[in-house]
Length: 406
Ligand code: PMP
Image 1 (cartoon, rainbow, N blue to C red):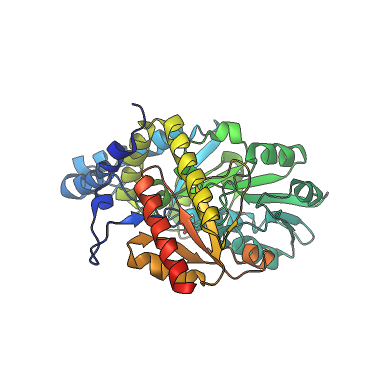
Image 2: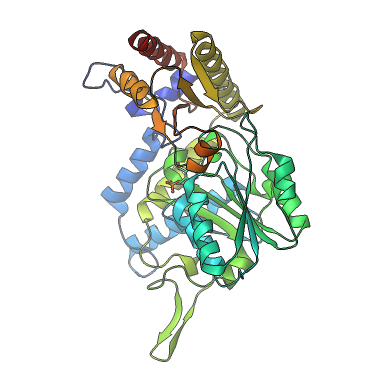
């Protein structure tokens, strides 16, 4: 069906909320978390009203039904992501846990003197776990710099690789700048040098289907709550052989093969990495989310998001006194900005007073902020359900900020 934003908005009950201060909700904090369509809310509701049971261990009807819905979710989400044949899909708590699982897995493999490549535009979730891994093992991290316009410096990226490089981790889309990195090129470059790669897809999957076979790489991670699905759930897609040689991340029920006083043997991935009762409802809710997303006209979505991005960028620039951080060509619909006199906190507070939700601060990307010599920005991040009224509300708020601070 052709993309019609007003029709799409009807799918998201929260978008018609009127806030206690009487303002229409203008939700421009999609980079932090996105809103949920009615079908996902209903799917969660149905699970708890009619289907709730623990999986894998029960012989009764409800348990078998929940188990099959859980495993079917793994399959349908794999299909949506076009995962490679030689990969496994593991459910985690989110992007953060997925990356920690991978860095924990590498802790026995990385040796003193090995090198890890990450970038200065990483979210702390794809920064700190690598730092901790490096500290534990004596490995060295090389940080790839970012150009003034927010693009990753590809010359610096290539120069960061040495004989000792073992792993490279990088974001697909920057949460603070909106930059879309050339990840297929990056995974190919690394692979040619025998270097393993992890792609942080937390900010890319919300903007359109990804084809993991085409992107390449050994690990891909993202969070359910940013892709219009439930929170407390995330996905790690990883190369099967590498996962199977990793030690368990957590241990306990469900991940074992045989437990005895003499010792325990483990199952293979994915079960090996899903110890204990998982977030069953959220997995089933996430499958419903991707079913919903599969029905969208993504060409239409991309055009729509790009036109919101362009219009907002132009209007912010012509408002005067606004500096936009990150203008990489073809970027995603995320706008980080600063205003001459107003602190980002002031901008967000004034916008909140008129019902506009944006985010301020370092966006969990302090190394990037330091690189640009700032402590934070104001950030408006758009999803496909945002419309021109949202842009108008944002701009009316910006005019108010200007009046107060002029
Ligand atoms: N990576 C990126 C690029 C992100 O934007 C975020 C969330 N802001 C994360 C990782 C962490 O995701 P989560 O908090 O859902 O684990």
